[in-house]
Length: 143
Image (cartoon, rainbow, N blue to C red; front, side, top):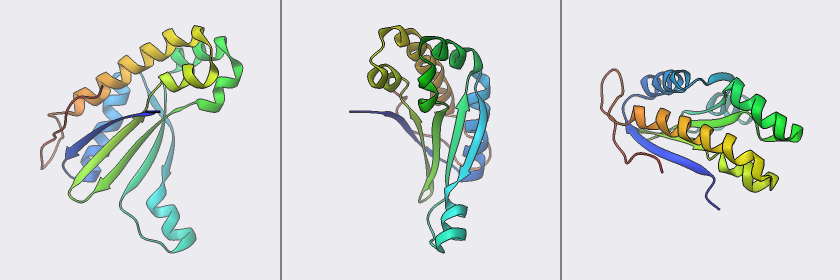
């Protein structure tokens, strides 16, 4: 089962993660949570990994609509967005909102998932060809 949408970008991690936040904001998503996996694993296990952030993105109107269909859908919220280093590139992955429909089995969740998917795809597409600072972005648009 495919559960994510992914793009790979060239550019400094710090610039890409900043641009990801802006692209999400432009589509009505706020970042409610942030987990710095790299720092956590270093602090708790003394293990080194590449830069790795998990951003919990939420679009309040869409979350409200989803909760109106099924209060338990909060288990699947917010939409996770991973920004992780891969050598001199950065991988950006977002959860596929269709997983809400698949996991809940509720057809009424489909319109919410479709709109969330359109907005998340637009955010990812806006990053392709655009990374501020040194470097350039690349990759096929999500789909």
